[in-house]
Length: 163
Image (cartoon, rainbow, N blue to C red):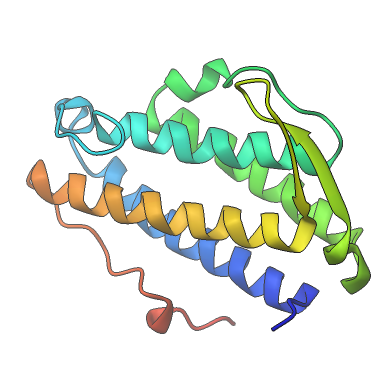
C-alpha cells in the first residue's frame, strides 16, 4: 500500500499527541526517577528521550540534505530542555511536510549514517520509519516510568482521535 501525504501527517500528528502525553508523565517524576538506571536500550528515562528527540532531528536533517556526523549536545540536557527541542523539531518537520506533495514520497534520499556508511531509501519509507521509531522508544519510556514507580499514559493509536 502506497503512503500518501495525509497518511504521513496523520502518523506525525499522532506522534506529537502521544509524545506530549508521555512527556507530561515524565515531567511529573522526580529528577532522581528520570535519571535512575533501569535498563533498556538506554539506561534511564532522560537518555531514552534524548535519543528519541535527537533521532528525529538527525532524520529531519537528512531529509533536507544534511547528514549530521554526531548526536546533538542538547540530548544530554534536562527532559524539559529535550522536550522544547523536540517541539522545535516537530514544527520544522511540519514545515518540511508543507513543502511536499505525494510524488515526493517516492523520492530517493541518500544519507550518511553516523558511522559514515552511505545509505538510501524513499522519503515515504523514511518518514514511516521515524514515526515507528518514536512508537518503539515511547513504549520503552512507558516501561521505564513504571519501573521507577510512575504511571504512564495510554498512547495506543486507538485512543488517538484527531480534532
